[in-house]
Amino acid sequence: MASYEPSQETLDNVAFSNFGYYAVVAFLGYEYFITLDMEVALFWKKHTTGAGILFFFNRYYTLLWAVAEAATPYYTSPKRFAFYDCARTVHRNLTVTT
Image (cartoon, rainbow, N blue to C red; front, side, top):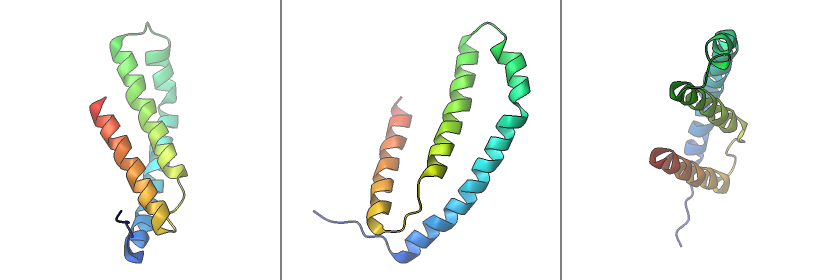
């Protein structure tokens, strides 16, 4: 069985991209908090519709995925990076097919 061993440069690039990702998560969280009052007034107090369900799914699935991504540790070893890369590929395939 072949093993996947990314270079140190690859690991450094992934760590660098995580910093940008944290900025995006912070911006997304900020946007969620400043629009929460409008969301409550427009969606929570109204009758549930298909559009409302789609809105909630898109809004909160994105938030949950962003928080889960931000909570993953840095890839300090090639094994950890390979495991994460595999898990991310599975998630992407499930997202596309559902």
